[in-house]
Length: 116
Image (cartoon, helix red, strand yellow):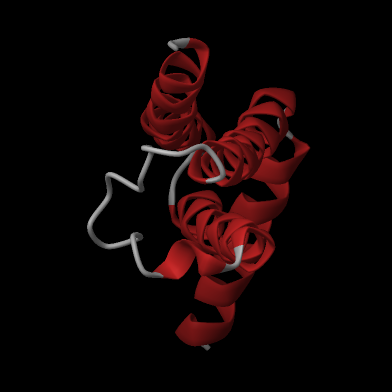
């Protein structure tokens, strides 16, 4: 009985969070920055002298499309946990943190690409 009520509460929270415009925008933005990171990394790796700075991702960047899809899926899973478990205000904060952390790599890539 309690398990059913708990599942209902989680489903309700998830629907409330997805119904929130800010949560939807931040979820989209977090996926967008990951895709942007994959694209800018792929462009950068085609230039001579540039390499993947992230040691964990250095061997995974052989297929930029697969890497981009993988990163977006992982971000969606992490964001889904936030949307399922957190009240709307805290979910917004968690999603904002995901966007802010995710935007660092594309900005760094763009800076490196714009320097000769």
